[in-house]
Amino acid sequence: MTESSLPAVRVSDEVREALERAAPVVALESTIIAHGLPRPRNLHVAIELEQSVRAAGAVPATVAVLDGVPRIGLAKDGLERVASDRSLRKLGFRDLAPALASGASGATTVSATAFLAARAGIRVFATGGLGGVHRQWTVTQDESADLALLARTRITVVCAGVKSVLDVPATLERLETLGISVLGYRTAEFPGFYLTSSGRPVDWTVSEPAEVAAVMSAQDALGGLDSAVIVANPVPAAEQLDPVLHDRVLAEGLAAADRAGISGQAITPFLLSYLVEHTGGASLEANVAAVRGNVRLGAEIAVHWAGQGA
Ligand code: PSU
Ligand code: MN
Image 1 (cartoon, protein in one colour):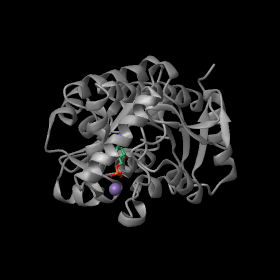
Image 2 (cartoon, rainbow, N blue to C red):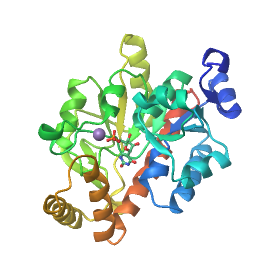
Image 3 (cartoon, rainbow, N blue to C red):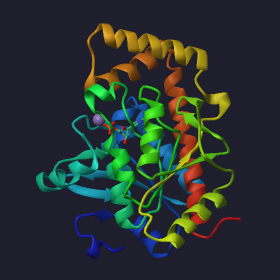
Image 4 (cartoon, rainbow, N blue to C red):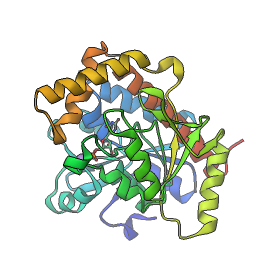
């Protein structure tokens, strides 16, 4: 897709040329950089992720909105801005039109990134964890817009599941209801983000990037399936958070949030920083390891999808 047919969106020259050649491209989100990882580590991770996509033979397309312009593919100064500008908003897909109209800048969540990437013709997207159904959903009705957007967007998303601060079983039920395919990558269990397994089964397991590309081809051959395929890729066992520590600290964090009367939007940042602090930073290392693995796998899938796999 060219800029002229997508006037509101600026696709970098490198990404546009890759798409025109049908070369492998991997979309990357920016919320994880701006709001998900501490500074200055976030910039180092952002740069490393792009390098790892290139090393695998694909072109990285980090997505963000800068000064009212959705950007697909950021140069170094764009990445630096996303990593350092504390005024950047967090933009879901419903925020895109108001952000464009007002000239706002923001990092894109999974929903906004998947929306923009798919519009530009990018089929593979790698991230850390998806948003999902929050604990206390029956009271708050808090469910990430990621799920609704992925229900109507034909894109393959590589992730390590959803964070255990969410309601994992409820999220899996919603994925089923919404018709989003879930493939365990070399696992029959849905990953637990910080943990290799959430303990919940998945219905389908694939073992190679080429198998994911085959699922994508089958989706196209069927037609009319405008929903996402999730490739659920566990953090390697050697790099996961110690499950005993995870379960203990999460339970303590949930109890602490309850005592402090924290609920709604505030609970996720509270629990995430509680986990980082009370695991001595180990949850952050597991988080980075998970993202790293997903981006590497996303690049391999994109290479196979472009017909260049071995
Ligand atoms: N999960 C993570 N780290 C993140 C996010 C999710 O482990 O940074 C971000 C993603 O950008 C995701 C968003 O799309 O949070 C979901 O936010 P919400 O629940 O507000 O939709
Ligand atoms: Mn929410």
